[in-house]
Length: 209
Image (cartoon, rainbow, N blue to C red; front, side):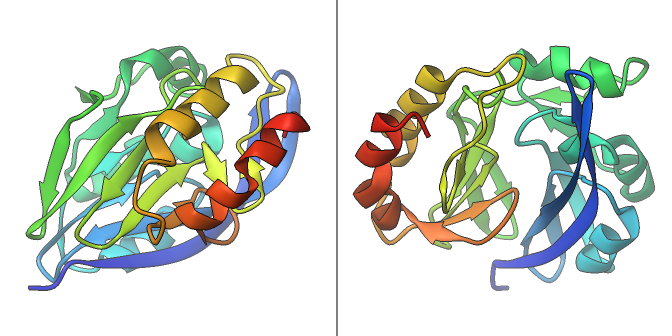
């Protein structure tokens, strides 16, 4: 069977440091016709389950633990019978949203997650959040970057547990070495490519964005 990506946009809120904002989140599902993994569980379980269909969900994989990315993770995991995977460095953020529910498994840098005959490779990319990760899928020529990298620049670093120098190091060291044609599928907004990012990266760093 052929590995594929399914996508929906869900709407809700993001809250941190006493402020709340309206946001649209990308929901991504990677798999074949029989099994899949879900990347993040934002605002709408029904929309994600529609993407999944009748497939077996092997895992709910969290790019990081800001509430707009994990708010529905326990509900979704319980509904589809799948474990929640999160990098341990993001437990401080996870516990703000789900103090009474722990993730089921820890993500590790370099870990390979197999699904539908393909592989997702975990890249630890701190900066937007301490436990932020990206998922590189070589077989599809895609990297899912969560809020680490967008078409318009690095993820935001103006809030608690974030750092601009750390996120730019993560992008430079972990993402820019990927093939230039690699598609960047972020947690919000439009996609880009690693080649396009390389051409803009130095300017982003110079202006602190």
